[in-house]
Image (cartoon, rainbow, N blue to C red):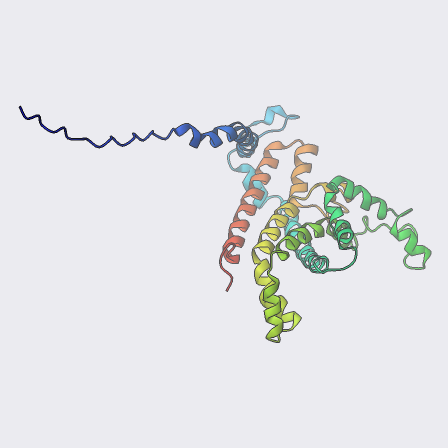
Length: 311
C-alpha cells in the first residue's frame, strides 16, 4: 500500500496576548488619590460659596438666617455704592499694576539676558523680591513709609517735604505709595517668565537681521516681541488675576484706607465676611468677582489669540 505523503502543516502563529488594561490605567490610578483630594479641596469651597450666596447667613444674627434667593445680588448692584467703588478701584489697580510690572519686567529681562560680569549675581538680586511673602513685603514697606523712621524722615532731613508726613495716610499719595510697594514684588515675576522665553530665541535670527541691516529696535519689534507673545499673554493674565485678588499687601499697608481709597473688591469681601460676619452677602460678592474674572479671562484669551501662530 502506498502511504499518503504527510502534508506538513506550517506552525501556528503565536497567539497575541491581549494587552492588559492595568498598565494603561496605572498612571491614572496613581494620581487618583491626589486628584480626588484636590477636587475636594477646590470643589467644596466653590460649591459652598455658591450656596451661601443665596442665603442670609450671619452667625451673630441667626434669627435672620435663611434662604434669600437673589436678594444679595440685587442689593450689590442696586443698593450698595461701596461695591461699585471697590470694583472701579480694583480695575484701576489691576490696569496700573500689571501694565507697569510688564514694562519694568520686560526691561529687566532684556538687561539680565545680556552677557556681563556678575550676571548670575545680578539675576539673583533682581529675582529675590519674588521669593518674599506678601505679608513680609508689606511689613518692609510699612517700615519704609513710617513717618518717624522711614523715607519721609530722610527726605525731610534733606529739606524735601516736612517731618511727620505719612504717604499712606494721605489720599493724594497713598495710591502711588501702594503701587510702588507692589511693583517691588511683582516686577520679578514678569522678568523671570520673559527671561526664560528670551533664552530660547535663536541667535541666528538676530545675526541674520544684522546682516540685513536691521536696527536693534527693528530686531526687538520683529523678532523678540513676536517670540514673547505667548509668555506676555500668560504672565499678564496670571498677574491680573492675582492683582485683582490682592488682599495681603493692601490690608497690611493701608487697611483699605484712608477713607476707603484703596479698598479693592476682595478686600471689601474680606471686611464684609470677617469683620461684619455677613457671610451670605460676602459669598454673593465673591460669586460676582468669580464671574467677572472668568468672563474677562475668556475675552482676553480670545482677543489675544493665545497659542496661535505669530504672523
